[in-house]
Length: 184
Image (cartoon, rainbow, N blue to C red; front, side):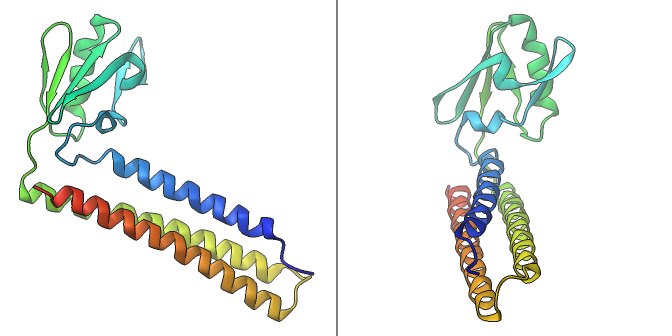
């Protein structure tokens, strides 16, 4: 019995989802440039429930160092302001009664180094998830009674190649994000 290709494609799908999840987490890390994705994790108390900021307001970036938040319901301005102040962004919102402006200050050298540590931690967490997927697949291969030892070795080799490919992609993402943050 030959190891089915869908076995490896399912593994790759799980690893791709992990990669996308890490990319999404890293996109919310501030790089000194204004980007609406900085506000993706912010939840606002709105009508008795917590909602994503992007669900209750339009977020735009007219300049490299400025974000503008324009709520659809002006009565939510103070709630949005409170949510931004509570977040870990370290940015003070300016509320003019119609919109909220967020000036993105330049990052200090110390803050850049902190962000690089956060990035490395998130990348390492992603690698751990990839290794756990590899371990699960290797166990499934070993528990499959219908394959020979040679097929098992070839399967394990293919699993390792796939894992190495995704870990390399994570490392490329890490170096690109670090370069982006350390850029003054």
